[in-house]
Length: 128
Image (cartoon, rainbow, N blue to C red):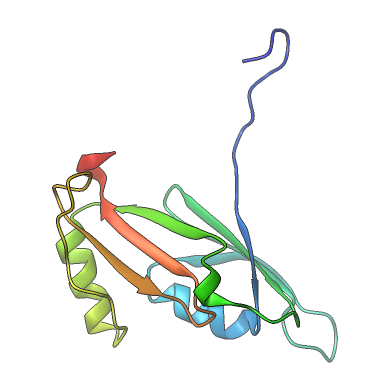
């Protein structure tokens, strides 16, 4: 830490998406709530700030092409009881990957992609 400078309060990623409203609805199935949105008159929603417990994500509308195969960024989420959380997503008719147990995630981890192809890896809070 730099001397005399307070540490940062938070870091919130902001992802470019094709349709903010669609993405807000999709992330709601993961338990996120839109705390703030910006929708200009006569236009679709341009920006949203989502929260789920201590996790935050901002979404911003972009017309630029996305390349999911490039894996420019992925999001790692920590869930209390990763297996039960995965099953809740299946109940929401989402398609999470199978629960795996790599050496760094002995309590389990799975992958799911959002509507824009962003990769979300979900692990258990026990491995934090």
